[in-house]
Length: 445
Image (cartoon, rainbow, N blue to C red):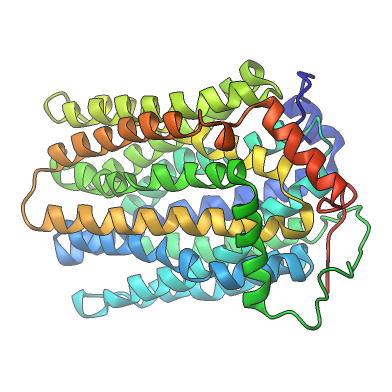
């Protein structure tokens, strides 16, 4: 895993060619993510068409985030208590079932199915995402960790870019129902690959954490206690949630594409594709620049907030210039967003003992979905009340820049400092107290 040494990390081609377990996991995520983004564009376009207001699109986005926060106390312990691969397989099967529900949406009286179906679909992702994140360090080496996380992030980025763009075209040409069916099938295809992921790990049951007697809530609180004991780790968990404070800007993609630029599903797809392009190239560009250096990673986190702020400032200005400037601005903004997602995840996988990693990653994702849901609700209500979407883009820019300033100043403090030395000290303290298990050790039931 990441260390204070500046050793070169393994490249992407080498990782995929020599690590069959990660290759199967990555392609499984790629296929599932493609269906997700086909589905998102078609669903947003359908809801906007049936209701005619930005609030409805905002409610879809809220339904796609809030369940993750609500399920955090359950998802994290489940991921750490059970076979993570099996958790992913079951999540995908349920996802395929829920994905078919969107075929029932026919008019404004059935729009509620969009919200309910999305919430159910995202509930399965509440388990799948942390399980995949916690499984990754057990199937890759230290040198492969950065590339593995960059590729996992690129899965999302590639499919936001390609899936959204093609999803918008397919939705416009072939109809939304076909898109919804494809999304359901993608979960099943994903499972075919994940089935062949066989983690080469030692299964161990610690005496300090008896699985038969501890409740799910007790397990969750162990993760919270760990964060209290390690402030730099808590600071890393706060990174994504800081980005989520401005996450409501995402509702503007549907509004700009459909209503500002009058480009329909294809316009929404293009803007989401630009978002994915930025998220894709961010981690890829950063890997050779930061290497395994935690101090450089801290600097990148601060810079990424600034880049996102600049991007959404340009996005607001694009109203007068056209759709393509808006797309370019989103590439810039989500270049920063991609870095903000990957860097903290790598550091968390490095620092946190594997036996509670699922809980920490679940809390990390749950917290960002909470802040994103709150921000999205605020943005949706503001749009519904007549506030200009351009001014809402400027507001998002200001929030990102404020996060850069606040997070950068706060983490300069010695107790919260994130650099090579602070991570080394946390790791050493865990080894002394046996908080950190042997490399690759997980607890299954």
